[in-house]
Image (cartoon, rainbow, N blue to C red; front, side, top):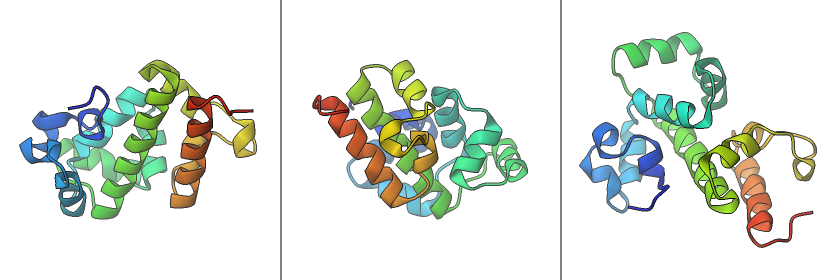
Length: 144
């Protein structure tokens, strides 16, 4: 498993189960719904409060709290947004060299994103592609 793989960021085998670390199994897990604990662990890595992560994923905070308490699962759509955020975070770690730098970069306004925070762009596929494009430019030294 890669040092910063999406399954690892979401809790790895203890949270997701053994099959999540195998190719293609993450898509099946997303369809079935990730454990709410996976989102909690990602929020912790990103140093985000529960209120902020619930907003980014589109889950009312009380609903997320209830799911965490009951060890329930996210919906397929919520799971998809969680994995999308984890993928962007993984790309940021690779481009910037550390989890701390990546988490900070995601929360800092960026000129290349019209002054918006990368974290605020990951709620849509076009926004994710835009953030990934900026990260690609950083990685290859073309960032302005």
